[in-house]
Length: 163
Image 1 (cartoon, rainbow, N blue to C red):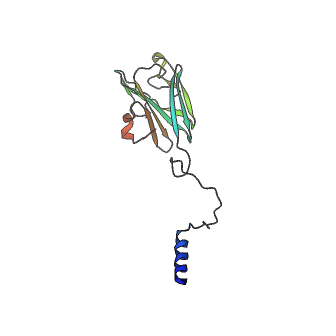
Image 2: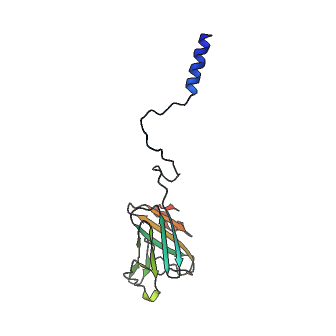
Image 3: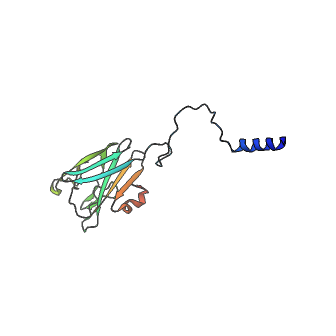
């Protein structure tokens, strides 16, 4: 009978959860599914308005290069894509916009007011009502890039994370 009591006690001890005696009293971090630090993932949206483009970033850090590209029309505008640019006679127009950790706003200008040779990084040809599909691009200071919109495959060779 004594052997049966000892075996039962050992079996019970093996099935009982042990207490964490590490001395760590800090609050435990709950994994949000976004990364290993428990920090929520960065998200971004862009809205074409009557006056330009508004970019909103949540949980961003540092600054970002912001690109925007049009596809699906006969006159795809790639001059603000931060990637390939737009071939013009005499060169390539390539505009990459800088936005903060929370985003930024770009002002739409008419094509006749846009400096294709040395574009103003705060100006854009994009605004509400543009024909075609629009895809957005962000790249952080560490070189990590993110894309979203109609044609994320446009940036496929860059290996970006699709939002």
